[in-house]
Length: 296
Image (cartoon, rainbow, N blue to C red):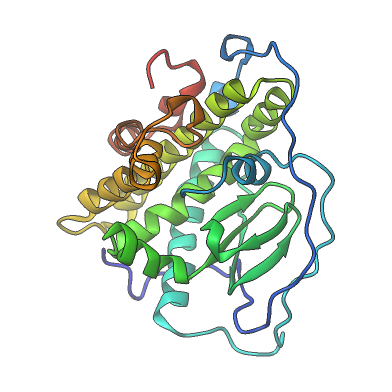
């Protein structure tokens, strides 16, 4: 992946080295019954990762409950931006997402409001509660920020054996995909439906939400390739390898030896690969409506 020297986003907050915050936020409880997939009508604009506990994922993605007080890690505001390679990479990839999604929204008569991306170490307070490095990268709809502890990049290499720059970029683009879902109203609709659904139904909705974010990541890769010609040999394969490694079935097989589809919250390896490829091949977010797909 060729990215050195490209535009870097200014929407990155570097909280590394500032110490973690304490406290916590309310979780997202699932209760009630009777809301199935067939009752959910998701409208896209103009008709338009990662082995985490399901409760944590639903809380982060759904934005349910009252926002927790945002006591952020402290860092000298006058300190210059970090110039280490990882920081420059993150700022560049976020810039790519801004350059990809802004014209897509403009073409639909809307305005893309870019998310902030927060780099932290250990723990961080968010509007969705306390985030930790153990949770992996995540998006909080409550404050519309993407959070990432850069040690996750090392985990990708050590645990999943996928450490290419493009595989890392795919992770960021997936989380930005959740921001797009927030902007167009998809995540709010899913959150309301999950609040009235059974656990199995809520998990099924979470899977469709995650697969759509994978598809949006594919759309991002398509648009960025058209503009920047940044892909190199093996890049797409590395993203597909990442999608395979973090599929619910693969993670469950590794951790417990068995696969329980009803407990999936992100989708199987095959599904994650399929939807990323669909987004990349089509380059059109209208092709990412997982909520109306009969087969995932």
